[in-house]
Length: 229
Image (cartoon, rainbow, N blue to C red; front, side, top):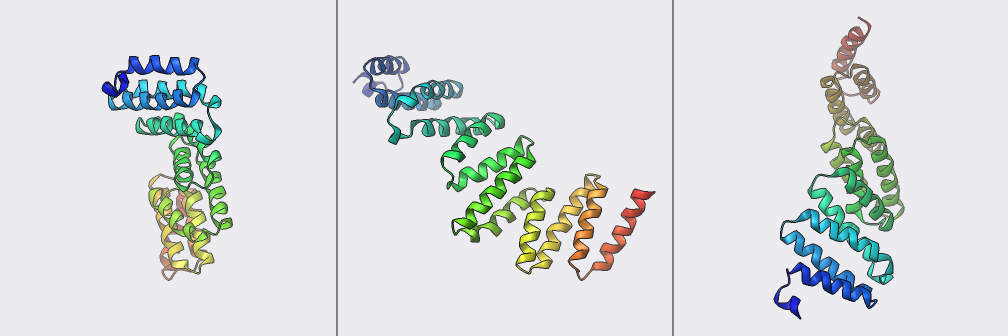
């Protein structure tokens, strides 16, 4: 009853949680942990909110399975880590969440993005491939082009992403679109001083027989000279 008049009085809520735990009312205890974490969050005490959710995680295995307490708490913790740009901590949470909810598109895309943010590009591509296969197998293959295009727009210099989109465009008989994304990749590589990678990219462009092939051949000749000279 005291909480009805002072919902942000955390000392009262903490005592109530202890009382509920002693009486074995685990689900009720966890409900109050969530409320206490939210109260800390409203008071801009984000570290305290995270600590509260972490403490509740220890109790979560004793709660009702259908309540999915661990997942609820992990999502709250992950949201805090994302807001604080603590990518490495968030990555651990999202890996667990992704495994628990494999059909959640937002979780899948966020996990891929987090791998990139912590510099694990190969892991990001493996997770992407896993998700693309999942989309196709579940009859949602129509989402693949848009997903890849969005990712390439965000990271036009990522050869792994670009090559996946290029293969898709070639399958769809859209060589001009494939040339466009390869052209941007080559530009990014040249700007980064990655001449040998740029050469491979331009060679791939020429395999697609673009209408302005002569220009690409001239650029390729200059790059060959730069590398050999």
